[in-house]
Amino acid sequence: MTTPTTPQHPAPPQAAPQHPGQGPDRPHWPGQAGPGGYVSPIPVRRATLGDALTAEWTKIRSLRSTMWTLGTMLVIVIGLGLTLSLVAYNFSKDETATGEDVMGLGAVGVLLGMIPVLTLGVLTISSEYGTGLIRTTLTACPSRSRVLAAKAIVFAALTFVTTLVATLLVSLISAALLSDRVPDGIGAGAWFKATVGSSIYVALAGLLALAVGTMLRHSAGAITGMLGLVLLPPLLALFLQSDAVQKIGEVLVKYSIPMQLFTLYGAEVDSGPTGWDPLWIMLALAAVATAGAHLVINKRDA
Image (tube, rainbow, N blue to C red; front, side):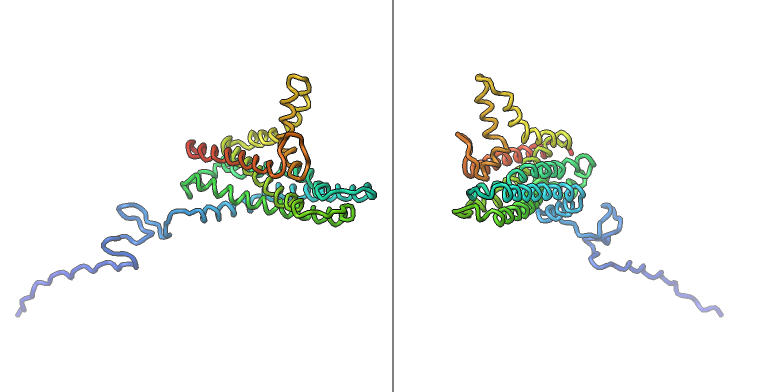
């Protein structure tokens, strides 16, 4: 005898196990492709200035150009400063000097050591345009002004500290060798200008080079322009000796970067910058150039 069977209904389908963080408002677990596209498992947030500073510090300390340029600057500043101090110690034993004269022995080394700093300032951004890395940088941090500000802060801080170490060492060597030639001693003002003042000046000159590199986006052109800005005015003044253009030549010499640096070390120039004036002039130049760089980098495509 056949027993009547009761129709069986199919079991309700079981819901797929949910991952933590998956729910009705977020049906797809991060890392899966859903209707709206791929959802990254990595938390995404807006880049901050701190992130940009970390990225720029990582880049600038990992580049070989940083080691070579700053290493060359240290060799030039310390080497020339030590050489001139030894020459003054051996060949001016019976002469007296002022504190500015002793501290000024490092001026030539700082002037020539500025050239590698200007080169590095240009390469800090122009190299990224040359390799195309600037596109990756701006993708990670879309705020172009923030990127440029981070580059300026990291580069200026690194340049200032490196220059300060070099100038402080040269000043200590010069003072140790020639202290007996200075009857009145070396004043705090001379020390401060020869170390902190000159280091700030070099850092500002480097920021000027960074701004020029941002606007030109071409390493060779920007480096050539910066070298011309440093070297051309005093050389051009040599050919402006006729009465009609002599005053132009005098102005070029008085306000040239080499003469401004020597003035910061205590050199006196008739009717030219005095005291801390060179620092304010370079600050104004760097500020104007940096403002132009911010305008250009936000207007042009990468």
